[in-house]
Length: 394
Image (cartoon, rainbow, N blue to C red; front, side, top):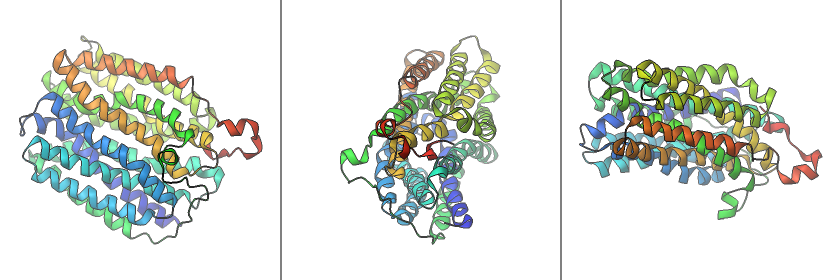
């Protein structure tokens, strides 16, 4: 695959995830305001999209490993646009939840089919590095999206203008996806379309760590804006922008650490930073400055979790299909976000916002403990070191 094709797929995925990120900024206030929902409903609206993403990723990755990436990526663009249109049309909580499910499925199809398409033409010793770079299309979009959503909402005073933008971004994503004509070679080790085949051994353990690390990110997405708004602070308009800046800067300059230290060591460092950041937000007397600083620290902690987990996953999966393995690993992240949204909202409603972030800090610490128990290489590689692929290192 040529650089132009890779760049087009990168833009297609980026546009889709900017769309998703833009909804995250506006959605909680829209649900509790215009739709008259509760904090729990707002958290559910954020989280349910990731439930759809988690269920769709393994299937999209499996289809991509069979050289069917192009139609799957294009379908992702269509579903993203339809999800945006659903936000425009929704007037009740169930309707907005349906729109979120459609959008979540679209995001999964975009990334989980595009990544194997790109990796199919990459040598084994470069797959990990390419996966980390291409992953910026998703993570960059999620980081930039809330900033875009906030800017549009502030400029127009209307959530509907954000929904129109989201719909347009889905269409742009589709255009870039169908512009790619590059061929794709099926993975020689694609698993069968069975539960076992869709849940490869090498992906589950690192995926679980990744999923636990997602909880704090999900809590921030779901309730940090509402928390600051409750304090009547103008920081509610830019806190996710601070998160995005800290995330992208750390990801850009810190990615070489995955190659230098290895995925497991990066896990430990990043999870410790995330835990500290969330714990600061959980301090009732932290104040606005403390909340924003804690959010930035949490962003630093989350930023390198994806490339580090890809490195560990590809190490453990060995010759198995990279698309399915990475897609399953990423599904655990979606599950973490799915749980974090409604649970954080429920805890904040029942107790208070600091309690919700105290729980998030505890989950992040649990991820740190779990990461120490994960083996960085697959069982078969321990006995057959000659077959070890360095593609898992970034």
